[in-house]
Image (cartoon, rainbow, N blue to C red; front, side):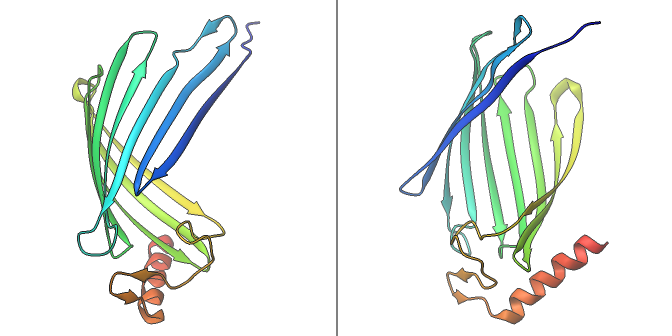
Amino acid sequence: TASITGIMVDAGILSNVEGIKIGLVGYNIGTISSDTTPIVGRVGVSTKFTVKNENDLTVGVGANYVPASSKISGSIGAEYCYEDLIVIRGSYGAGTDLESLNIGAGIKGELEGIQGSVDYNFSLLGDVGQAHRISLGIKFGQDNKSGKKSKVRSTKSGLLNTNTQQKKQNTLKYYFKR
């Protein structure tokens, strides 16, 4: 009977320097049995811009490095969030055996202190074909931006009133029930 043993970890750090986020990650650090899996290093930089509401456009670039094959690849992407509810995103990755173009959209909101999102992504994967992905995200507890539980968020034009917030929550509730 064959058995496989090993320990692997992924480790990373994210820093925010004057509104520019910089991330560095190492994947597949460790061994499985006597083989080693390819370690992958990734670095990314992103920043936010204001189009309609404060910080509603995020733009980022990233690079991957695989030491075992000395391959470097890169990607660039953008995400626009309309009224903190509807998200549209796209990216392009190049420099690997599999260049890819990704487009996606999602809806996000907060309901009774729980943040949720539903996302769809379509990827063109060169000669391999295409992929469709659907993801569901749930965050419990505190609001990431303020560190406090809140039902009203501030925007560039002031505070959202509770009726607007309630409409967003009802939209999210309806979306999850369908």
